[in-house]
Length: 325
Image (tube, rainbow, N blue to C red; front, side, top):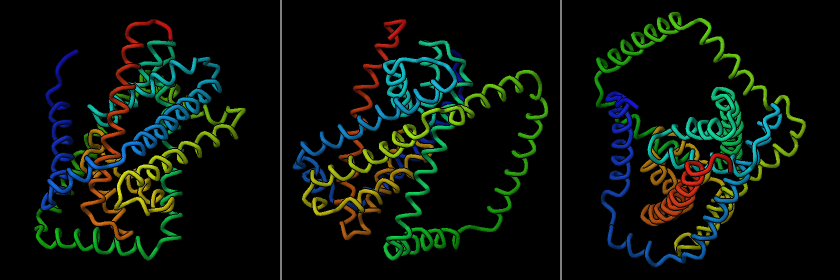
């Protein structure tokens, strides 16, 4: 494996961005009081939250298995589960690398072509994105007053303040860079068209068609809805870990999941920084002080990272030490 300096610098920059957002989120907070609140949390509910997240991971593996079965690939649930957990583990190191990582695991254990697996993963992610957007639409419709104040005060006014201090020369420079990059990408695409690209297209198309070939679309949707149910349940049960959030309901957990979903979509390792800020801001809408929201976000994020570190490492060891699982 060769060392790619550009790639390393890109991921270092993304990690630094996450750390910077984390610093801005915690800047000006009473860290001693914040740490005391985290230490005094009821960790029974944190464990319950971790159990709900684990259930979502298992359901994700079962759903992914259905896509493979539709293409006549009989892959055991153990292999699928280990691939999912290794993918989450890889995402902690390099953002979005986990999708390639879990496809590599299936290629190693079951010899499924990489691009076929990538097609199934993209199909899966499209459904997840659809669920996220549908959930965002629902909470916007039912809680418009709260969310409109967030977008007005937190996003619009902050962006307007930032733009007031930016010269128009910056906009011209960004536009020029985009034109140059667009031309470069177009040139590369023209150069790469051939058998390799055709093979990639056919493989991806096979993966994309996995849902169309499903005989158990109802079960696929049950798995998809159940995944989101357990995500919301993980947020809700963790509310009881802190006195400042114990009074919050399931609707608040659904809002927090939507905010965290957009945060985790950011190209930052493990959503660090962005997750904390977004979840804390979502709780501010329900009169939870930002400091307490940060404590809650730190607890649930750390517990989920710990779960992935432990179970992902176990899965990695299992895959590396056994040819078939």
